[in-house]
Image (tube, rainbow, N blue to C red; front, top):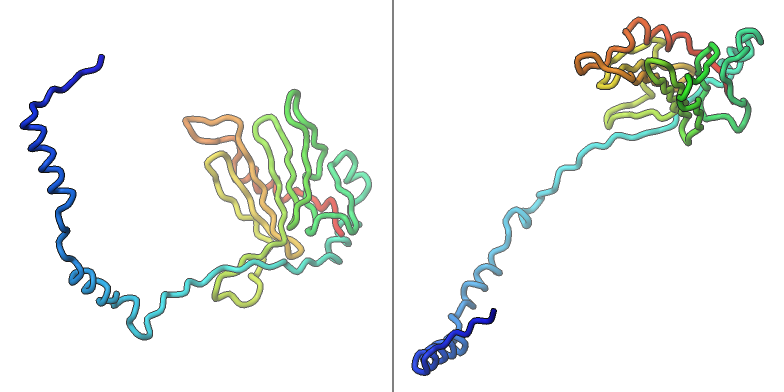
Length: 214
């Protein structure tokens, strides 16, 4: 519903005059203030020799792969040893790192997602489902070096175990490439994943076998 506000003629005239006075009122002279602000430069920006700090950056490069050793170890595997195991094509189209996969037969559980293998620009990704946890194996030839790093970091044959929020992982190096085996638990106990122990995870990673190379 519209409401009409009735204002007396005298009050309206006074209001109009007040408004006009405000509209046509001459603004205060602020030129002196503006000039002072303009003529006062920021000392932090004009101080001679002042430069912003340069933060060091990490760099990545491709690892030097010992393909000869990888081909020798692959050739040493017997036909019986490779029977039923998941393998990939070797040769020039193989991933840019030697491929490590489970040495025994791998079969998806009923209703589970099938085994997946995907070469990447720097290595490969492999997925293996199981009853209590899923297994993800990643291989990469990327070497991360810090700003003060010189030569390529030293790699050892150690298997490094680490628990994660959804399971565990084991990292290791072979032939100059780096590998990461992840175990993703399908169930948790008291809010924590408890599907695999350190000994079991390391034993699984240690049992991975070379299954493809260039």
